[in-house]
Amino acid sequence: MQRRNFLHRLGRKKWASSPYKNPYFDASAPLGSRFSFQRMLTVGLWLVLFVALFLGLFWTPILRVDEVRVSGVRYIDEATVQARVEEALSGAYVWIIPRNHRFFLPLERIRESLGEAFLLNTVDLRSTGRALDVVISEKLSRALWRVGPASYIMDEHGVIVGEQGLEPLPLVSIVDVREEAVSVGQRVLSEEESINLLELVSVLGERGVAISEILYDKDQPYFVQIVVPPGYKVIVDPATPLAEQLDRYTTVLRTDSRDPSVYEYIDVRFGNRVYVKDR
Image (tube, rainbow, N blue to C red):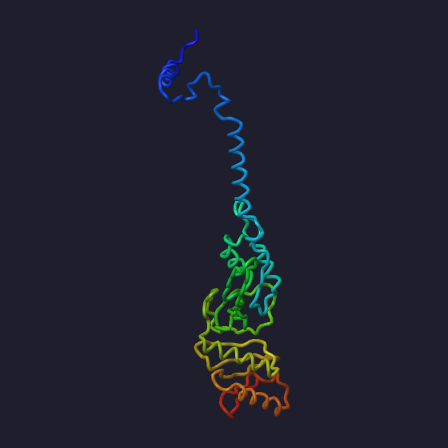
């Protein structure tokens, strides 16, 4: 014998005697009438409208960046920077919001991507209409700072900005004779030392003097040894006029008929007194 649902019965009697009817207890109201087709259609239309507005807000072309403009490059290829930025803008957040949406641009991601790929001082990102302006300032690789077998890239301020890769760079090597360990981001030369040494490199290049390497001791900044082919040294003081010192060096080469390979060093730091030592 089937047991009666007393709770259901009691509840139906209670609602039947009240002015408000609960369709759950109304036996005359079928289940399908509780959610009519018209209501379901209305809810469905509102849901479709909401989804359309949501997607339209995020995927409308008016609010998306479709152009990347790069400026400020000197040695880096502009097209390479542009491709790197476009790669960071591709895709979407959780497959819904596009990364190139003007209000959701991954600016920090772009900065990190460019910083990993290039040696940069600053990266300025500005959204202008449907374009993203990328203004960069490069770290200028001016020389290689060598400590033992390891070589590091040094910028114009005497700061180590990275390790030298497998590919050789057309930069002058400055050898730390003390071989003190360094790390990326560390300043190895003061501003004055950096200016003096880089000016020395520039003047030597203008004079057409071939350089094998420069030996530098930070405890003796006035005693800089330039190693030139075929292996002898030219000793200069970067803090004094370099043009005059190099004039004295070229005078020695012009007036001495011997092969330069006989020299051990030529010291041109002391005015008209030039010291030459043979091997």
